[in-house]
Image (cartoon, rainbow, N blue to C red; front, side, top):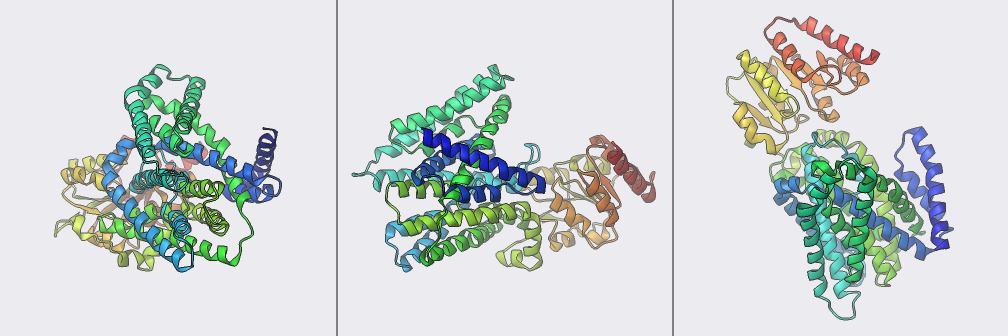
Length: 549
């Protein structure tokens, strides 16, 4: 116990010191945690590191499970399961083949394939932290695909426990695990929301309930001779946060992430060993498979299923990191002496490399999307626009509305009162049916795609109104090479000033303009009660008023 406490003390002292540096420079903390781990690795025993890493992974899996929205999964589940299973199968099989070609035995080649096949739900999703009422298509897809691959991870963990680590095959473990997850789902739908409704507002009690659930399910898993990560995953499903009265629980349970994230990342960094040439070869294979093949394959599959290029690419970029499940499997296998040291070192090193890459791609996903589009990669992967577009041949002098959900309905109502033709550009396929009922003209696709604007008859339009809260989509509208008036939503004063300087006619800041004011201003502009110059001046005044406030 003393050794564990000493190790935890060292971990948090190093984390605190490097966190101060990261905060001052406004940098991601993940590289600093990994660096702290490399330093701590010289002072902490490897056995302790393996134990800490396993518990850190288990609690992070629990925290991901808490945020799983099973209701949203129902709407994207068929696509997500297809994408997750196909991606994991194809990439896993290819990597196993490469491992066998390198001379690995089937079991170690299998570990290498698992590490390449299962993608992350950790670093990438930390950059998808939008509010519940602002959930882009790619976020919904990413979360559902991660859930699918985590379920595959559970099956892999169970399979290894039943057939590799056990002296004799133990099929009953699958039945017990199924019963544990069924218990979690039953608690979720029959008990948990009633319990949280009674305890609404008592954050301390809610925190204790959350901890009790995860400890209890882990205890049940261990009692049934199951891996602790299976119990942690089931606990997260049991208290998932799609009920309104569980918000207090989510807020308090999220504090656990601040405790276990440093433990996980620092212990991961501490497990990094000086690689041999053989280990570097395996690492290179994993990095190529995870960082390049996984995102491109997911993008291609989603494009074939009719999703727009931006949603497909941004979803693929959330799958460019070695999964926490893959790490747990490798650590558990290493502790059981069932994996070669060189393969284990390669998986750990690949996890560190891909986490660093995911830190960058998560922050710059929009820029990467536009870079790939400019070079024709998206078109070559199979993007199509015309199959989900309906535009009248004689459409002109119309208002183009970007983003139907976040104010687009109000704009359509204002235009309808003025008998002004409209066209909606949207990239959420779940809204298409409502858009068809609300507007005769629409184009499904990415606003960064020139073909979308060609279908929308941009040069014949009277006005473009972009209401998207996503910065990279707004940037695409700002960068349009056109003389057509553009109105763009912004959320920060600095962004408003920059967009105005780059040529947009007006900005809409939700912090300074009420939702109904948007429709009134646009109606006045379209009815010529307000001149374009007055509209631009009013927008500048509103941006300045926000700055003074």
